[in-house]
Amino acid sequence: MQHSGRKETVLDLAKFIDKGVQVKLTGGRQVMGTLKGYDQLLNLVLDEAIEFLRDPDDPLKTTDQTRRLGLIICRGTAVMLVSPTDGTEEIQNPFIQPDGA
Image 1: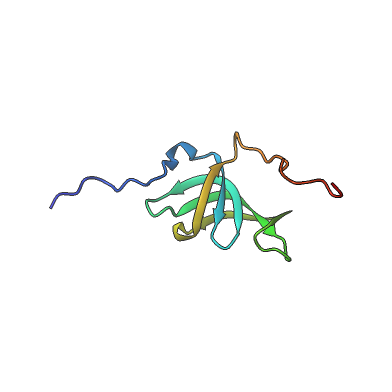
Image 2 (image 1 turned 45 degrees about the vertical axis):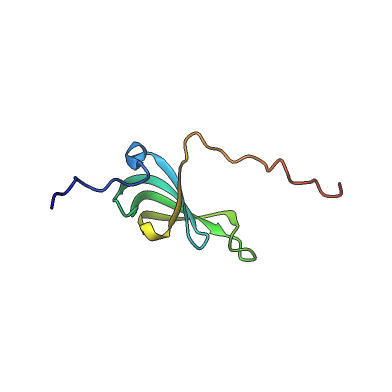
């Protein structure tokens, strides 16, 4: 039986190495850091990682509070979304109705 090289991941994360990424994890946790490495199971190594703390009243919402984590590993089974921090910015939701409208 022949091996056809290493298994390719769906995501090509090589272009994000040493760049800032934001990672959403199952359960609502969200972290941001510098991608230092990954494997085909999507385990991610992030340096200078920061976790966005969640709203105690609504665990699916993040607050402006953060917590420094340093060097971390995100388990591939928990990773839902990986997005670059460069070129993305948060905007006001244009669909929210002003109060009293």
